[in-house]
Image 1 (cartoon, helix red, strand yellow):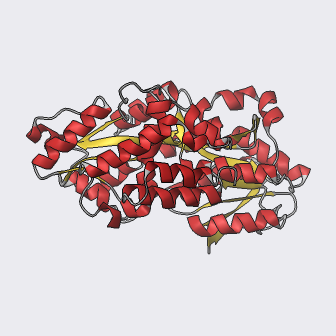
Image 2 (cartoon, one colour):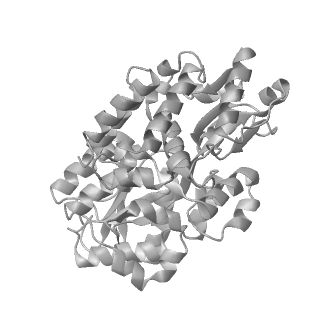
Image 3 (cartoon, one colour):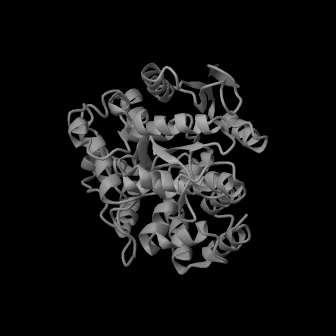
Length: 417
């Protein structure tokens, strides 16, 4: 399933060089490859060979390669639960002391990006690429026609649900069949009600961590929203890959949508002049009355991650670290990411972001990343076993086929797996 390859798939990628596997697909693949090309040109005696894969095949391939001791030198990943599995098995190097010895490398990155790279207090991956928080979008024309204002609290959200339903407009677009789209609602509600420590206890594997009162309150509020008609009719049959949920927003059939920052580019490309004319509103998720969470915090993807295979040779590891120092997020890569409508996980890019055609949006994303925090998506933070159970139970929660108590019991049963 590799879409392109340069070199071998073994741990070294050939004598005297390192190897690097990452995901295919435009524009990300080209940006990654060009960064490697520039590094190779500057370091002809320390070259990196690359191999690219589609998303799902990559997950299978890298797991098999790590287990067989045949992983590439540099391993692209999502951090969190998958990285924990690799670290616990001794398949990737502990980079903590290297970062301590190279503070300039660490300090140039948005510090919240290190969360998913850190396992038991040790850093096992180099954060890279872009930050992708979840955003609450709204259709400005629909709001203006209804005489409505963007929500400032959870109570405002519930009031808007009633208002838009009375006008025969779906309050929220949702691609519920894709499961992870539903998850975003729980991620924010857990955080806004109980603070970041609620999910942190779950991630840390604490016994019965899902039984926290804030979890039950969040689960209940989700079902309150479903019962109030908060989502488009038939949401459980809509897929995110089709972008149908986003079409509902920019065509005015839905007033609001909770989705990733990458949705901005999709709406810009597919929504005609919806974005360019100023029709799209965006904001962070509002507070919940009485909640303990930081209203500046967000959820999503704090970054992407590069690990070094523990089976690589000393020479290959040195090449990887040299790439981390001089190749990852060089000036051209930063420019390329911003040009694609994304925000690199690099501090001090306000000037570049402000000069971009999407300055308002990318500056907004940068502000979230630097003045708050971006907690990792649950299905990436948890182990594959726990994540699958989570996604299945989230679907049942939104379909009202499990109670909050049943959800809690089901999830407590897989803590630590």
